[in-house]
Image (cartoon, rainbow, N blue to C red):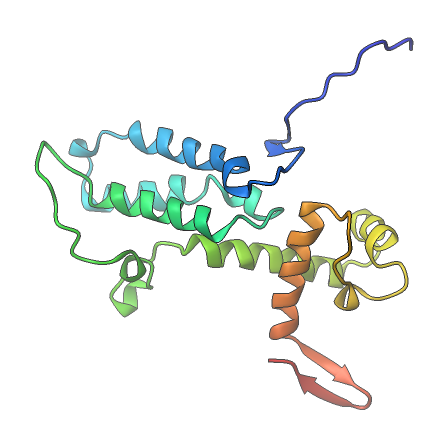
Length: 196
């Protein structure tokens, strides 16, 4: 085919190809996208219900795809959560509003007195645990076979350990597998144990 040049893109399917040392800086583009989207909403025309729907349907949904593959730092997740809370209590028509509830209270379920906003960090860990669960359930999938051949060829995914030179994606999935192991029912000999 006589290809003389190869172009490397920074992103593939919307995710970064290379993750650098500074994770907060690397995933800062998520914060920028959320901020740009939030700034586009003219809040004086929105009711409180409209604001809540926009936050849940747009601002909290933007990082979901990246959270399924990468362990975003707690710092970045807290910054995104703070940005969402600032928008919720934002100035309207030049009036400064009082923050009547803390961010933690806003993230509680409605039946517990909150607004049901997501805790971004906990949601990120849940998404990574879901990836670990998929590896456990679909051992014959292409993804599971490739990861097994590279990172845990002589053991199960539950026994996989960190090693030098592993990708950030695999390091993130290992964190999710650790969460799965904390709440998983497993078979010990003839009995059944609960690993909490």
